[in-house]
Amino acid sequence: MTATTLRLGYLPSGILFIVLFLLAGLGYVLLRVNAVLSFWFAYVMTRPLGASFADWFGKPKSMTGLGYGDGLVAGVFTVLIVLFVTYLSAGRRSRVPRKNHKAMRR
Image (cartoon, rainbow, N blue to C red; front, side, top):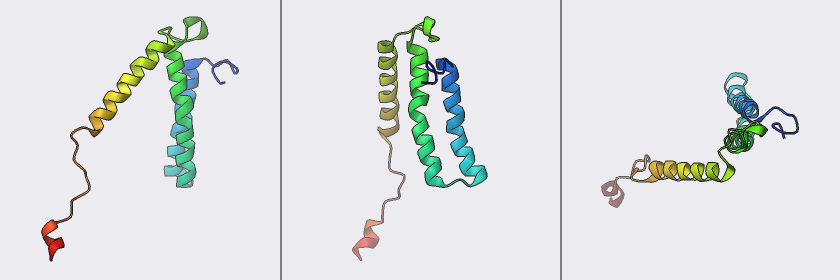
């Protein structure tokens, strides 16, 4: 909506949603805004933030995009997400200390 209806374009829309996303954190830290409200505001901002940048990469230059194509952008981001999640989860040990089994047997 911000990119097309309000005619901001995809990149300016993405920047707008970055600012709004950061406002949630700054409001929590500096103004003591309710933690739940800050979390949900930031959570909701992630959807238009990601969509704005994905559209910026994928849409044609005539629509203020970079013109890589929606399919290519979706494929590249899918691969990046899978690699990132795999990296974070594979081979990591839990950071929660395990209970001492000898002490539990007593």
